[in-house]
Every structure is written in structure tokens, then in C-alpha cells.
Image (cartoon, rainbow, N blue to C red):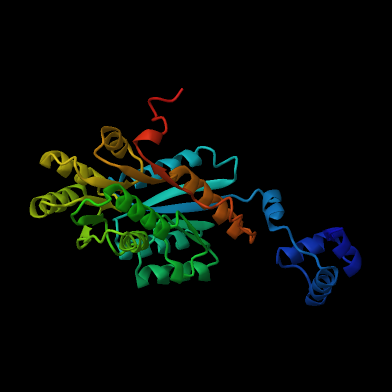
Length: 347
């Protein structure tokens, strides 16, 4: 049977109020009495249930999500999921807020993390940029006892508390395996469209993709990576130039969020003969998959990621373990034949 505060009070010979003051590190207890209570706690092996204590105090957890701004459909989907979760946050004793920063801007991200620290939040979830200033900001959050979860794109060397997202190397390997199988013996190089190689998820996807393609029985050239900054106009320009300059192009792997520009360039050039694999199931990629312009979409559930980040940050704030199995984010593979019902098709 687990020891209780009553057992501590009996063993130390003090009142329950004194035990409570010691447990919550409040003043008004003489040093000799505090030492006696702490000795009783150690002797009994008492472990405080932090979550229950916070519940009893009706603690509210202010959590901030720091997301890239712009028209990236997946990031806007993440933001919508955070705001939806915020509708129910009072019942779950959380207060959610969203801060947006320019995409791939390490200095702006570090500044946003510092702003969250100044607000004394209970946790921070951020789409990480792989840069020293971001790692330094995460270290400052740790110094302030504020847990940090990286979201979608990891920064493992930063000391962050948890990563919420898919295994991006595995995602890239999956894309490479599909590309190799779909192309078979068809000749021609493959182009890769990324957002920025300054984010870890894009680098890891590329790593996995190249590994899988190199293992294919048919050797195939992979063109230098095109960095579209997840900007539709820049992505359109890069892909349009590639289509014009590489007439024997066989496939395109879009590992970031430049799909709007990619699809526009394919339409303008009238190219539906390529093998095209992209990430994230949006209205645009769904339509392209249905029409046969895109061959496969690799997807991660934005709602699951937001709910997972909330659970992880609350557990970290309470010093509780994270349920790793529950927080594992699945990678879904969609082709035309297994598309789930769209929003307008449900019910």
C-alpha cells in the first residue's frame, strides 16, 4: 500500500498543513521541522503524484505551438487542428495558443521560443529549423523548466524533450521504393523538389529516398535538389525549368510543400507521363491523385500530431512518463485506389 500524506504527518509528528507546506515548498516551516518531514518522506518512500496535485489545484497548462507562416497547406492544417483542440481545452485544463514565424527563419523561431519562455508557458511545440540559435533557445527553455516538443521536423541534438512526427528517413525510403517500383525499367533521371535543406525532416526524407533508389536494380540518376522554399511561385519556376531542360525526366519526388507550384508546372507543360510522389493529402494533392497526375501521396495525421504534442507536453510538465506507443505517428500511403472519403463525401 502506497504511503500517504497522513503517514508522513504521523511519522514526523506534525500536522497535515505542515506536510503540505513542505511538499509544495512554501514558507512558514522551521528548518528543523522541515528536515523531520523530509526524513519521514524518505523513510516511507513517498512519491508524490504530481498530476493529482495539479488536478487538485486546478492547474491550467498554457501551451504554445510555433508554426511556419505562409500558405503551406499542411502547416495551415496543423494550425486549424490546434485551434480546434483549443475549443475543448478548458475541460482538459489547457490553454492553447499559436505563434507563427517566417518559414525556415531560424532567428525568428528562436525569438518566438524566447517570447514563450518570457510568458512562463507550461510547454512549447515548434516546427524546428536546424540551426545553432534554435538549439540555444531550446536550452534556455530547459533552464526555465519548460518542456519542448519538436513537431514534424526534429532537432535531436538540441536536447528537446520529445519529437512528434513520422520517421522521416523511413518516409523517404518509402518514396524511393515506390518510385523505383513504379518506374521499373523506364529510363530517365528523377528530380527532387524540397522546401529547404535547413529543416531536418527534408534532409532525412532525402537521405531515405536516395538510399532506397540506390538499392534498386535499375541504376538511375537523381538530379540536384531543387529548393523551392515551400513557395508556390518559386516551386513552379524550378519545376517548369526542369521540365524544359530535362526532356527525358522520368519522375519527381516532392518531399516538402511545394506541391501547388509543382502541379501548376505539370499542367502548363502538359506532362502527365511522369511518376510523381508527394507528401501530405490536401485538396490539391487529392485531386491530382484522382486524376492520375500524382501516383502516390505519403501522409501524416495533423490532428494526431497536435493531440500527441498536447499529451506529451502535459506529461513532461508533470514529470510523468510518455506513452511511446500512443504517441507514435503513423505514415499513411495513399494511391488512387485507397483514397479515404473526402470532407464533402463523408456521411
